Image 1 (cartoon, rainbow, N blue to C red):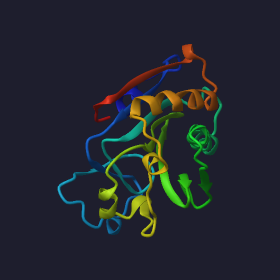
Image 2: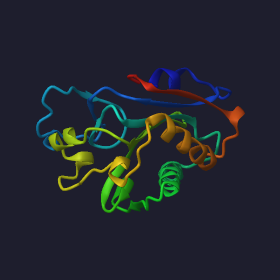
Image 3: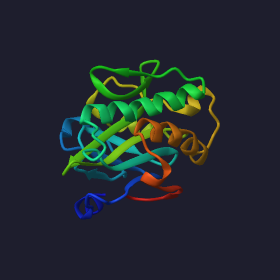
Image 4: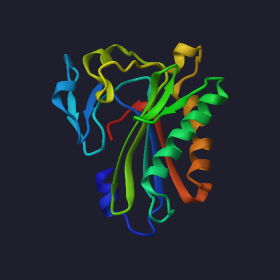
Length: 200
């Protein structure tokens, strides 16, 4: 992602990467070690996104947005809101009422976090993105204070009776995400690797 961002120019087509990770904790630029409790054998990787520590693993949809937000005239706060709203709209289609919180980015259902966001903006371009918990093992979240909040509870789509795999959830999310970012199909390249374990 960093290399793509460094090498792109004003005519480079934006990309959206959809994938899942093997078990890994990622620590953002603002990450503090006291939010790490016991990560066991799961590696902790320092990243250059914003935010604190979180967990990624199989059954969680990762969506990385490699966008020239300056070219699209989208401010950073608006960009984050559009990502969040795409998740809210997708969940609404499943009959799940999701909301935002003023004090913490992400999407919440019944006060539990179902989607996390972490981005980096460089030269007017974004990378990193968002995660949506679909059908995963939530136990590793017990090894950290998710996103730096000791009392934060985590949930997933499966807990609300949604029995769909990452491929279908991706298909349902993308139209909302493309609409929020004001894309036509020719404006963006979608790379879908949700059936594979990929490290970005």
